[in-house]
Amino acid sequence: MSKYTTGELAKLCNVSVRTVQFYDTKGLLSPAELSEGGRRIYNDDDLRKFQLILTLKAIGLSLTSIKNVLESELSGEILTILLDGQAKLLVSEIDERQKQLEMLNAIKECVCDKAIVPVNTIIGIEDIMEKKKEKKNKIRNKKKLTMIYVGVGIAASVGLLFMVWLIVSHIWWGLAAYISTAIISLSISAFHLKYNVFICPKCNSVFKPSLRRAFFSTGDNKVRWMTCPECGHRDWCVLRKQKQGG
Image (cartoon, rainbow, N blue to C red; front, side):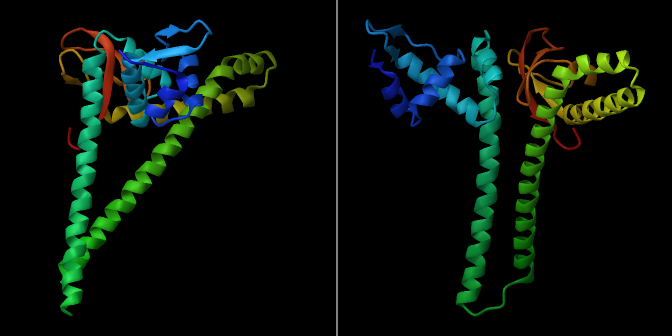
């Protein structure tokens, strides 16, 4: 089995040494051994694990979720569901790009032959561009939603103490404003969870828990700690956006 220093591992994974050190300090990547001089030595298993960690980070998992998934007894099954969802997304994007390419080639032929471009072709391109614009807006809205979640998390950390201080100080208008903000934040989170289903890593069943159970479960927008209603197994279940009409 090959052995690698921190620098060699970073080079093989096309990242900086600082990145390797970061995941080490977070407890996600521990060296197989230490040299007599205290240098951290990694092996092939560590290399594969680090490549997997980078892949999971690239598809949007938080560091906490990555650590939880890797420690799960069904980590392989969870990863399969996550990667399957990412693969379907990429295939969909490839199909869309292919349709755009075919449309552009058709227009190019018409232009070269000095023919009139069919109206349905132009409309088709407009539809594609419109869908592309909608996709960009969805990504932008997702980033905004993430920022909102971060804000909610920070507010929740100090919110309890702040509310106690408002009550002790008899600042009732401030208490009312705080409660209103909390209600709005909870509504946003509930709206996000309402349009998602969960996939059990053990029996692969797709289920939709009550909004209360989903809301109070731990995790992020990729995996959450849930109990499958079909097989009763409790583990990190994968979130999947519910299909329209589902």
